[in-house]
Image 1 (cartoon, helix red, strand yellow):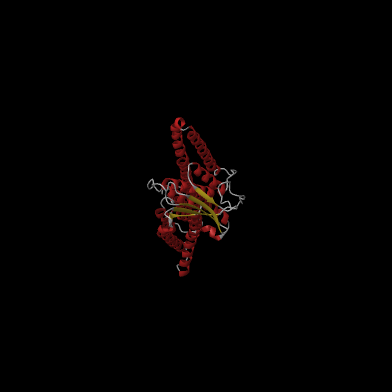
Image 2 (cartoon, rainbow, N blue to C red):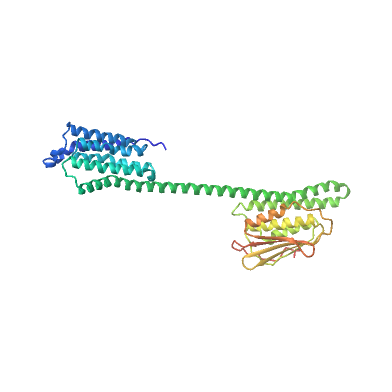
Length: 406
């Protein structure tokens, strides 16, 4: 990855090193060791100044080429220790410290180990040569001191760089996690919206399939009956009005799910309305339900309403003339069962359907955590049973069944 240079770090390290080089003789004063410090303008002073300034230039680019420039920072120390040994040699650590720190931040530590080891080795050797050149006798203790100084010069910025790099990586990991969570939430939201669109489109399709097709057929019959049988035409017109009112009720119920303040009828009223509609078009159906049942919630109530509606429509299509029975019962404290049963067909079957009605019922049941079972019965009929969980707080719906539906 392309990394920009660090001119600020280079300038600061160069100014600090040269400033100390100028001030050390003044600060040392009458100290005997001050005599070993190079005076400004002397060859030793110039050599140290050239080395620390060269190091500063290397520090500016060490992030881009750490494997090359990090050892290069200390490669200049050995010639300096040979040509101009003295206490000013310690000023070369001013650039090594930020150089190691920047290199650790710029490159993976596993790839940087050779450069770090080479840097530490060069610092230790150059320090030992400088001590010997300054008049100290070579000894094991002097070598150990040189190694300790190299470990200090390289180890401190290495440790600090590792801490900063770890915190930086942790922050980046947290940012990535936040982005991942946000992306997951957006994906879940998009999936939920898609499911809701599918559910709404299915509901609108069912409303059209169950009502509008019947309205169209009855309207066509009115055109034929108006001259030949005016009374039958009036009855058909009444049925058209009933079906139109049922369409509006279904649309109101569907839109009511989108409104928090919408009133919703209980399951008895919804199923009773379906039975009335079914009877107006000539279907025989019985309804049995307790006088007091819990309200399963608006979405679960709509699922139950659609199940009964689809089952009665299927019975009318595939078992014409058969008697139907709708039963509502409570199972314990947490479930409500609604069963639609039709007997064997009294007229010829219209043929098998596409099976999409059962698919829609299964999908709706899964949406609210309900159980749907269906199949043929021993009497040659068909039965659909929906068990709905009472997930919402029950709102008691009391009173007898509507007149004529018990």
